[in-house]
Each structure stands twice: as structure tokens, then as C-alpha cells.
Image (cartoon, rainbow, N blue to C red; front, side, top):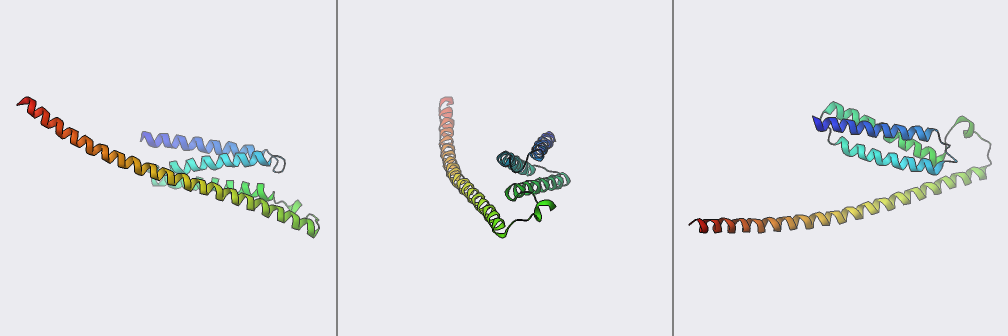
Length: 170
């Protein structure tokens, strides 16, 4: 019960942090503050990852469902903000702006190139994560083998100690 209360408090803190980030993003200009917005969205993504990890520990099915719904809502908000940052806000005023076909094509090409760069960065991060996981897997295997060997040695030592204690008592 205590751990569930601590978990609820931690999730509430995460949600408060996410709300603060979205409040800060709302006050920024998507063109001139683009790097700051991207940085804040990266922070929000990390926090959301922590939320996802903690959700696995929720025991009450109703509270777990509520947490999953909040998680999904924040995930959609982050995706929408990333999309808005990448493509620019879609408003009625700029949808029908009179641009020449060439200018629209260049703008579209720029957006595609930015998306391609973002995809390459994401793929690079994914490869790094996979590499780190492989290293950690090997470390765990080595630790497990060491632990098994130590247990065997302890078992032998325990047997010897028992025999020695019997010998001294006799």
C-alpha cells in the first residue's frame, strides 16, 4: 500500500512536470524558439518514459487504466508538438497563403529533409540503445556465471566447515 502511494505521488509529479513543459512550450514561438521547443519535447519524452516504466508497478486495474489513458494523452500531445515544430502550425491564415509553386515545393522539400534528418537521428539513437542492451546482456550473463560459481564454492566451504566442526566436537 505504501509503495502504491509513493508510486501515485511520483506519477503526479511526472504529470505536473509534463504540464509545466507544455505550458512553457505554449508560450514560445514555434519558429524563433524551435531549438528550445525541441529540447523541452525531449525532456517530456524522457519523463513519459519514466511514467511508462512506473505504470507497470500499478496493481489496481482501474488506476492502471487511468494511468494508461493519461500516458496516451501525453504521448499524443508530444507527437502533435513535434509535428507542429517540424511542419509549422497549420492555421487558416497560412494554409491558403499565396506562394508560388516553386516556393511551395522548396518548402515541402525542406520539411522532408528535416524529417529525414530526424529519422536518421532516431535510427542512430535506436542503434546505440541496441548496442548498449547487448553489452548489458553480456554483463548480466557474466555476473550470473560468477554468482553460480561463487555459490558452488560457498557450498563446498559450508560442507568443509560442517565437517571441521564435527571433528572438533568429537
